[in-house]
Length: 510
Image (cartoon, rainbow, N blue to C red; front, side, top):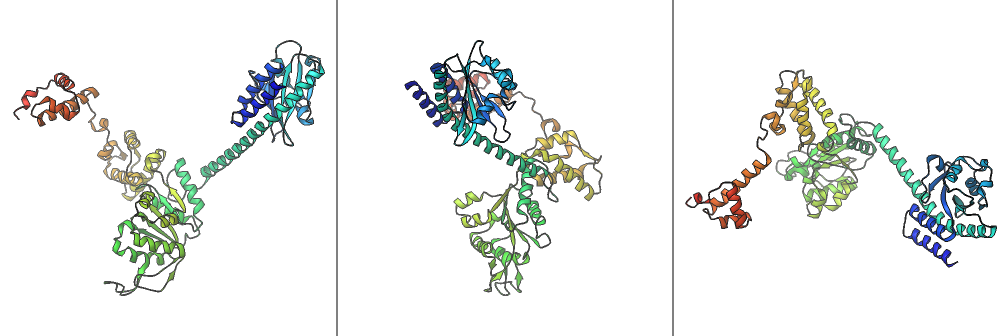
């Protein structure tokens, strides 16, 4: 009795420590075999959706595929125990007719050691639900011994049932998340590509998905990404994909406007508001009424303008410069920046309340170097565009030129690629863009004939010799001082001077 309680305590502790189910079962099977002689153990779990019975785990028992389907027929013993929620004790397995077992059960029993054996099966219950069954073989015994074994197995099954149910719940949640992820991925794959957008990489498909989700709302959008990735194109796609596509789309480059006039540009001014204000002028917010206003490089505006911008975004009301009459507008605002607004907020250069107001729905556009699969499609698009503009027939990009384009790191992103293709179209004379039509920044050593001819060791020796010579010149040939400057010991300095064939004496009188 003490040993049985110790077993139950071990199982409980193992489960409370978060051990995996198969680890706990290995412990249970080993202890039951040593304590009660119960061997050849098998755990069978009921699939709640299909009703199938699958052997989920067994101790030191490699199961073939056919042995895992223990519910192959309704009359199998494990299925009977689960359906009837009752224990099964068979004093002699060999005495049962073969048709009492499912094919999977027969395959499991075939793996048992030869000789007479008794079979014990108990259902595993969690609350009012039966989630599986435990089965064991043991040496033949009388009914009293078998009933005692069944009582112990019932207690063990109660502990194991908790772990089985938890694993079922975790698996069901995982299956739900996986199905949702697959649904979203399919939606992203099958969804639209906004007009004028080039690229089918997974990163850009996620951008298109976000554009589609937000386009028809009035939510403020913050487009983030490096210079030249196409933030204005995304803003246009949001405008064209929503209900305001037939309304005004007004662009404002905040970085291009001096601080002295940006307030007037955004909100307008009254006649006589300041020197040179000869007439009333509507601002960009008024011009974009009922439409969309795109504020590019919003990180460049001053703190005073940020405060006024925040009021418009929150209340939809502003006053012109020099005016006192509130003007109410209905404007959908899309902003963009390549600055780190979080750092600017920490440094006090950008209002935190404005940051939260414009960062309602952020869209990140990855740089071109992170979506190289789009590069050739973009290059072909620009090739066709500038061929038509310049009335030239340019048929293709040569393979060496493609290799150069793919190897480049593109700090200027899509804008840089467009400019490079435009230049190449103007330079080509034979209808093909070759490697030598690309700028020097894209040229490789092989293409430009400047590949290094020295080995790495020779190059390093040359650099080392130059540094030692410069140090000796600075200290007029005094090796001790030169060694200290270079962070070397005098011994190492002497060895390197000798190996590199340097004569320190010739620097003493320079």
